[in-house]
Length: 164
Image (cartoon, rainbow, N blue to C red; front, side, top):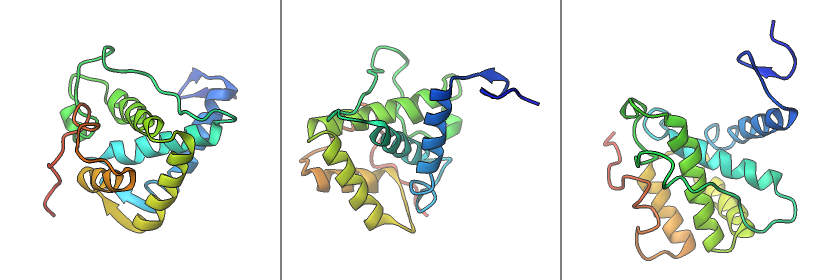
């Protein structure tokens, strides 16, 4: 039996447990209702759940916090299928890099309010549907009125949606 305050045998703070619970609740919407292939596009539900978690936990801040991963690890896209992260820690890309880049984009285009409004529209439009990277980027470009893919090219492979 694990002691209270531990996950997988590791001691964790109450604050960490709160973040985990909020993140997992966010999956009720972003993966549970707005879906994606979790093997091929894990970054979608994890990155969006991370953004939703950040928004829930924000008090009076207008900008979402993030970590710049550009000099911390080998540069791989966030949207590779899981088996392609053989020599890397996939969670750095799927959770961290995707959240950080989404947060930067939202911060450049209005911060917290833009992110909240985006998630609301995203959820409403795509509920009970399955998305891939290309459709997500298409919608984000439309929503934020972006003219090109430059905000995505350094961390996502574009134009590679599976043919189903």
